[in-house]
Length: 137
Length: 271
Image (cartoon, rainbow over the protein chains, first blue to last red):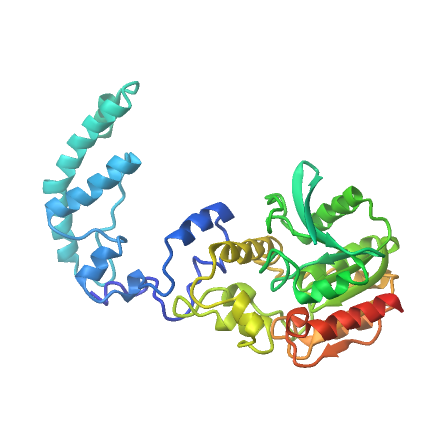
């Protein structure tokens, strides 16, 4: 797992992509970020086990049911219409990546598609979501 | 001390002012009023005893509105020309520290007739071969997620100086102060993040236009702007005194050695 997370942000050294020294975020947004900020917290590249990885919320891992629940929460809260997923990270064996893609496509994606269609029909009744969904398939 | 809002070109500019006598416009730097604290530091308090000190916060700092159109130093100069108009300042003393010193020099080369006396303290703004300005943005990234020792080391001679630790504490300080520091870095990034890094190649050949008597002050151990920059300023401004070096001070001499620095400035202004 540590190998897989090589190259991700870690506490050691300085991060040169995000932080006070890369001040591209407007001040009000930075204020919001600071409210939940814990100095010295572990970053994605620092995690040592699955529990920490899961708690970091930077990645979604688990059974089809868990993965469904986590993504569904995002869809519900943020009204996500499109998902881009990175199945392969670090030096993960290609077979493993293929396996999880297959499980996702068979057991998670159909449920998400069906449920989000219902959700969007309720919430955006003015838009013909069914038609939009058909053109995507 | 009183603070007020100035309306400049449909934007709010926040400034602090105090004292009477000659107007003295002070332009702040990284470890300074507006960028680490909302009120005067001891250095400024000493100045107010013998001058009418006016210290506006740079665009995006303290309560001054951000100006997203600011891209290069020229834009900042024009911002301040409008501030001068709004304040009806026609002849004044100008003191700038760090980035504020750069802005002061840029104003002075364009409008030498407006400046009675000029003081530059650890000013950025020049390109000096083999003496690059230290990367404050790199240092503003905490080490191990929480240590700002690198930043303190860049801005002060002594990274463990009580004020250095107060203004740039490890971990997270008071939210308002964190934001203040961030706003200053954000302002700095508008004119110094992408190369040219906090300098304007054209400035050096314009310095001869400055006619005001000028004092250039440098901390003995400035880890951000090498002393060669101070020597270049002092050499290139016709009416400048020899460079004054303050011992036991780094880049933020007004913070580390407030009394000595303020006295130097006041003596020079009253000469």
